[in-house]
Length: 485
Length: 95
Image 1: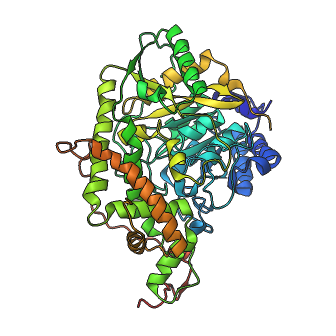
Image 2: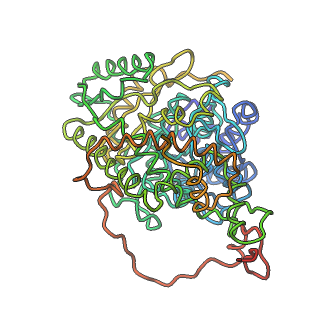
């Protein structure tokens, strides 16, 4: 048994009773990474020297000072699009191959306050564009449950590292499903918070109106602890919301009697595999037994979410990624006679195909003569999609469906066909467009590959999501199963 | 009929400041055409009286006091600059 099979609260107790040291926890991380990361390939950069030093200092503190937060000394992995001062941050792109940030993201500052220990930076699809982590410039992360299959994406490294026991927990980012989909594929718990719950300061922007940072953990309780640590308004992010942050762990009451669940018929329809459908229906039975009631509803504009998402997210990306020009930071082309060629060649040599494709799509959608037909149209449809959610949440507490239409697919299976790859995200994308929070929790297996249950809540009501997810987790054994590596 | 021509793709690449080869232009023409054709399903919806959503939260302008602050130290700024000389960023000829 690994120490990472314990929950945060249990490890905290063990530290307190001196049954365990922070150095032990950090050593466990690096030992496991040495054992399995050659296979899993979750990490892009390790922070070993610094982490071990910090652990030593924390152990001294452990002996002298009793006022330690719950996350004190806990080893964490951070997705490589979240900037870490002095620790290479690449977004899995050649264009940022040697980028060493000169500041910490707001969430990283919060982790420092909570005294977690950063073990390293985790692989992802380049600039978070993708659903399989195959778009990384550096390496292909593999699913710990089956090394032939993808871990999902774009936070594939973040989910795989937690599933493989290389860290206790990690941070990912979610623009269209990039936390929930890999969490589902890797059999771990991943939450996309409400838009505005967590500061985006220092998250390298992909689509600013959709991006959110969120926690990936082994249990719902740990997820609530980690969200608690990173939430709250930030003067450096004007889109972070001025709303109260409740105590998420106190919300885990174990009681869902009378809870009203909406199950959208569109989420169990065409394209959703039989094993996935069955796992969701079984999960609903489990929740029913605990006193919840569920009814079928409709989110009638669901089928338009994918188009809306690709137009809006690519448009925003084309603007956000214009900062990569080879002048102030990052890769610079050697083949340029003049400034214009420097921009063009730097970007041509520095970006991968998927990133280029989305920059092209976004530039097209925003270009003169097409703006109203594509970009503005998509923003209007976004209003309709959001209204679908608002209407359902007038009568129901949560919406439940699968996280993904199928379990993890094979490496290489979808990489040549962008449209097939995009369809992976049809059940997670609407949540980002509406700005509401959503979680994926393990709810079964198909041929040895994990399946995920998606629980979606009202704006800023992560507490109810956690309460439902926790009851489900405590009533089932899926989260106790571990991949063999 | 295709929605986007290879010349349009080259024009967009120029707007996006991306050098592309002839082969890439062909590939992007095909792929963007497929994506845009799919995206035209949005025209099934009547959105004449629908307001666009720029932002999901109801937020007004977020303002702060205009307090002067020191900028970043020059050596910090230059840490990630690929080419610099005498404390200044170096680029090739503008024209």
